[in-house]
Figure: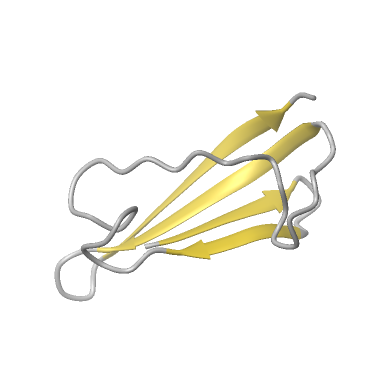
Length: 73
């Protein structure tokens, strides 16, 4: 599974990959708590962000989900 967070203008903030079967990459429900930091460990600004989750299904099926998230400090 791959989780990416973008700014509203499309800049990449965070890119995380989770191995199949491991924490965050298991079949069923998974949970990821974002600490509000970018890939360099720096706090992001308050505002809106776009979350994109990509998961490989059986065979060649790929599932993609997009959601809006907000950060308030």
